[in-house]
Image 1: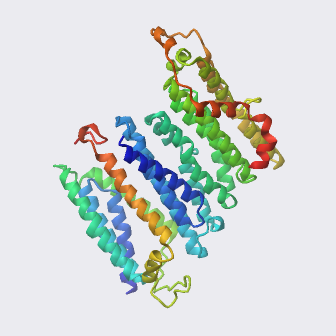
Image 2: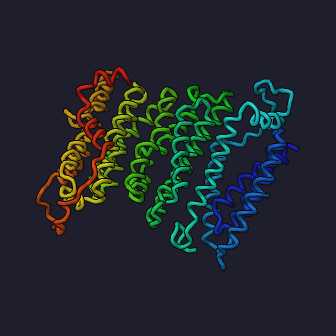
Image 3: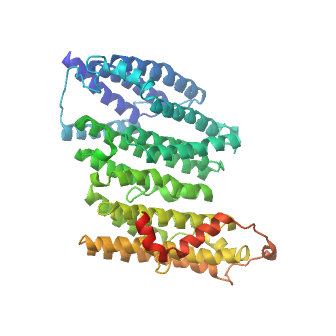
Length: 171
Length: 346
């Protein structure tokens, strides 16, 4: 079990490496999918099963699907692939950065469910009750976060409207 | 731009600034910063010119990186100390990371490269917003966490900001870029004193907002985007150009004008803290900025410019009287005698 969690952690770093060195969004999104899967697995290993499943659903089922649909509309017919020398240079370079981080930081492995006592929610599942508190005591943050997300929608709509007279001239 | 969209974006700018300023929890501070970043992106790319779109993208990337670093610093601190209070940042790696993140957000050297290009890509009023209001939340966070920041890094960044703001501003002919480098230089002055007396940082910041707003509004009235336009702008509004000269010299920090007050008090505080060499270095480096302010002031008051002003009709242009400009300009020229009162207020 301990080695499985270590494998998830290594998988996360490798997925981040894949995303950072991607030659084209189609390959970067593969890294994102893999990274979110192992990241959700890591969250489950820490004990936060609810937020892990929520992340899975929203990230993979919502955001990545929309991303894939919109990227497929703006398709690059002949993208560079992983095997090209140019891309391999990026992978090796960023891999060296990962190695540097490993050498400087060291490989510390913490395992087990760390139940953190937070505002008296010790015996209740932390992530469940945290989300419940977001809707009750933390409603101010909830409203602000909701407005932030709505604002993001308006900003994106304002940026992409106008076809070729707008901000995106290629459309 | 669509008026409803503009309303939503302006309200979100005010909301984001208010949230960050009035926050105690790092999450709220971060949320306010992100709302600000998002809301100003369409305002920067409003004209849909490629330079404006590039400026918007650069602004977004830089500010998003800085917000992520702020989040990482606060999360690391919460991991080690168990609390999210803004004033209780005690973990040393978090303090270093936060110093760097605030420097990126504000535009201190060596993270200043985005600022002139973003300012050049936006309209004059958006540039004014970027220089004044968008600096308010990061400066507030700087003020709140002033005891947790890394002094060595801050001093190095401040001195190099004053130096590079002056040096790189010397070669500019576009007024927005000149004002960007003046902003970087002033941020250096604000940052050098944050460890010793944070109230002087806020005083320098408020007076900087005052003077810069009056300059941007004046330039918006006469639409001076580059130096040759400034040379012939006296035909559009003669009185405005005279006051522009005085306001520019106030921004440079010359004695009888308002801009001298923050520099004077900062130098005095630095000397009290036995940092006389630092005070001397930044004073000398400000002389570089003085040169381009003098050049701008000279260009705004010259009456026989080298470039021909073919349009005689400009003499007959009737510009409406502009109350904000008159108030801000008179404040930014003549506020120095009130300095004891200013000191008691801030």
